[in-house]
Length: 330
Image (tube, rainbow, N blue to C red; front, side, top):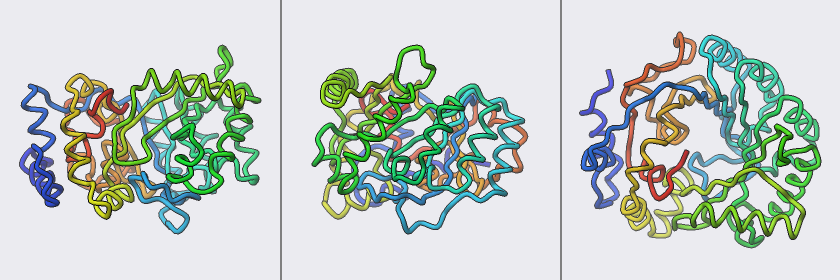
């Protein structure tokens, strides 16, 4: 069984880089808070770490050379699990989900099983000239597109995501708009995600959304439904960069000093269960990246009769400060 003692040991292990902050669970306790699972309404499916980009901020170190990719057997097990669990939302992520050769099958089979299907896209994998059929697939199944679009500045975007990505992303957004995405009443939802290009916290979400809405419409005629600003999570490639640049300790201290007790109630791990490309379960995609299994032990989706029970503790470590800094991460 997963215990508070093992939780503290995990946090101690993660604190070995001399970051002088209180462990996350201790921070919660100081505010009279606990982090336990609520009713699980969202299934997040990570189809693998294969990606066409090597983004600086990636918490999973995804990229073109990664071999972790969901196969058809695991896909069948996920569809079976979704069918017996009655999730409200199914959230498909990666890597770049578009690069998994089973993605069409996955969306078509999951679509009848939940009212809301989401896909997290970097836009460039979608708009590489070989996947035009995915635009129509998303429209047909009313898939909510959550698109990474870190900056309105081309140089900043490409410093984080690679040369040429900005114009490819703009083109993808225009194609989605042409299908009706982002229009009021279309039931085709297009949301943008903006995150910083360095070791600092995001700007105010309402102000950033207002600016993005004005500039994208004026310059390119692009519309969208919502924009979310998130802090980068100190895991994977981003953690490696923080270490190499000497920014790790300061960045984590910055996250911890921005801890917002009000954000704890809305963190996604309360209502989400995340499944990896090989079928194992986690509280969230960040815990997947840190190899912190759901309930503190390796558990496969094929052995689950339904969603995790409410009241179970959620595995936490220093990266959880990213989700509770400022406006939080939902």
